[in-house]
Length: 114
Length: 114
Image (cartoon, rainbow over all chains, first blue to last red; front, side, top):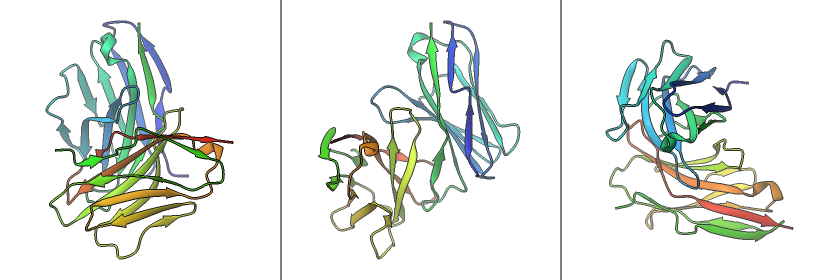
């Protein structure tokens, strides 16, 4: 089945230690998104790629970076995680950027910062 | 102003009963899509149903239907014959025109009891 895959499902890191979260997709979608979701809140968009074009949200901290080396893979790098970065990180894909296009989500990576 | 409003932070329903989760939206774009997602405690965001602004009929997907009232700008989710596995957080979301982004509501936590 075509799907969005995130690895790892659970990640524990230490304060200030860089961490990379991975997302891959077999849907061949052009758009890939990274969201941060804290407990009992709606997901918050960090950035997204439309093909190779990177789109950063204005309020995304510089501590968060992303790479998309090819259509299938997208990475979220947190350069120096703080305690406030502990959250669920959701990757999503969309075929295009039109209002008719559904976003499909991966299972998420739950990040703990010690 | 909120673009997506979900006024019910929590809802309870008995198993096998129907339940309606409310969602109102605000947009001046004539082209938009409305989406409902389910998020169980595991964290995965599961796509349930889509309604386009030009669709003449209400969307249905199995036990899920969307009560779309365009003039009132409401897109309520109806779950028929509730099951214990329906207990989860439910998010209403909107995508406008050709924007890449999905705008989420604050969510409604549904609990189904025996």
